[in-house]
Image (cartoon, rainbow, N blue to C red; front, side, top):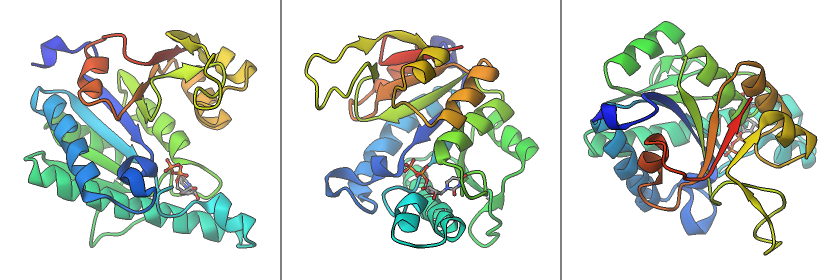
Length: 239
Ligand code: UDP
């Protein structure tokens, strides 16, 4: 029941990598299926969910521009990559009995609705998952910034950032076995310590608008529901 959850309306930020599985590239149907399973649990319990999906499993604008491409052109390719991921997610959601709508920040009327805030809110109220594609629709931004922006616009209770590690550490836990994990940390400290949580634009937007964020390990099954019930999963980042 939604009553069991501390957070009733949330925005989940999934990186493109989260769909790639062990191959590290593209879309792994098995991984997307497992994800839909976890998401089905909370949505069927009545949690209102918006998802911002990245595109790094297919294309990143920065990588393209490092190879000599025009940055804006490369970023548009990156945004289009997020639309492919959004459609793959929607497909899995449908097979799991989850109603959803894709809303794209770049108009693509044959495969998605345009992003319209009021319509997105209405979908959420009706229990449909809103999958937000094409980032902000502008080059030079990231899907983390999109997540921060849409979280504020859609008035969610918290932003959930799915990662492969169980929270925010003072150094990379993969490289440093003595890295210390934070249970809670402020956005100011994230910026001051230069911690690699989100880019500075996304971090500032959350900080300025009092948007709390939970950074958690998506690979641990059931973690989305646990985090939303307020169990100590990952790191809470606050203003
Ligand atoms: N992108 C963009 N504007 C946005 C969001 C994304 O130009 O508002 C582009 C950018 O090139 C980025 C790519 O889309 O590299 C994929 O998004 P991101 O790197 O944030 O995906 P993730 O790392 O979450 O998979």
